[in-house]
Length: 410
Ligand SMILES: *Cc1c(COP(=O)(O)O)cnc(C)c1O
Image 1 (tube, rainbow, N blue to C red):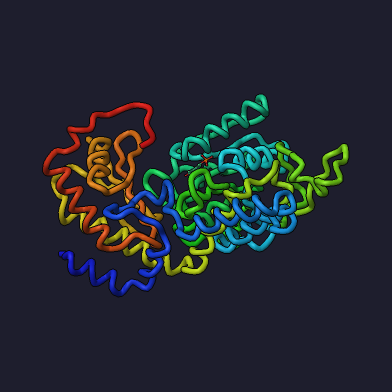
Image 2 (image 1 turned 30 degrees about the horizontal axis):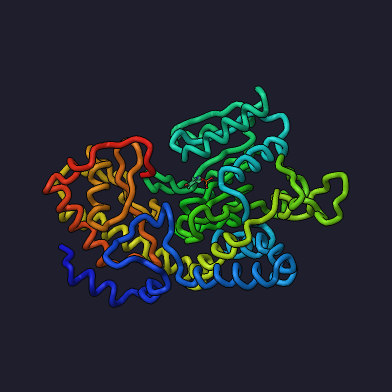
């Protein structure tokens, strides 16, 4: 049995405890949704003030050079690279994950001419597979999407496959793919591997280089705490820089944008993955989130993340047994990202009731209650309080007060 005092003791010995004070979190809220929208680093407000007030207000257009606005996609990209095992010059921050997926999936078919299959997971995040459909429509019959259950992906990588497109940590269950194994199998068959790191970066240590991954994308507003709609990113290792080209060949991806020349000539490095003018304010805020994670270190974050998710599962078993919650995340923390999910018949209403009690998680169709553990700011006592609240919701059937509604962000 784990007691409230045990949780307090765990917090007292937590080497990352001080990082919580770096985040602006409202009083009385237990925030278990950093996997969907990370909390705000306090410093982000001051940074926004300086970019808007000083750099924009006083510097005006001079700030593209003087404040190096133009260098932000690469600078922020290199910081991201430190978290995902990429070398400097292999990551740029830009656009949304969906747009970056379109660029990379399209590029993959150009890099692998003659191959027609895009292999993906049936349970991949919807936007990933929607974009795959869009790419197939654009290639007009030259691309075939092969959608399989996760456990059948490895065996399905054959010589027709141009690209294996997977999300490393499943958004619904938190299950982690073996990135090194699948990337190696793709390489052995002459196919490319493309990894979506939206639920990995900032949640688990990622080593794209060590895994031999070919391409990657991910988003900035989840565990990276970049703010709502933060820029996403693209990873292309140096070995592909020469050959890769992408369809949104805008002026920011040009070798010399300010030559204003008539023809597109791609930038020699990762810069060719850029398209239009970078969102300066949003990039500056994302940088604030990245700096804190780099300072804390992914290895320390992973240790705490695994401890938190194990604690949560044991507290649920202890307090909520017999109420019909079913764990759909892996039991083994090594196979799990930084989240834990339960299926529960009245999951939508139960999550709404929980939120009404100040414990914020989220709900995913059809019946999944999802709890994310951002180790920078979630404490052990938070989890004790969350499970007590959940128990009260279940015992009091509080979910009845929240009938299912359509069309809201859950
Ligand atoms: C959150 C998430 C996205 C988000 O895509 P946007 O284009 O930023 O809306 C994409 N893929 C995965 C796997 C995600 O978890």
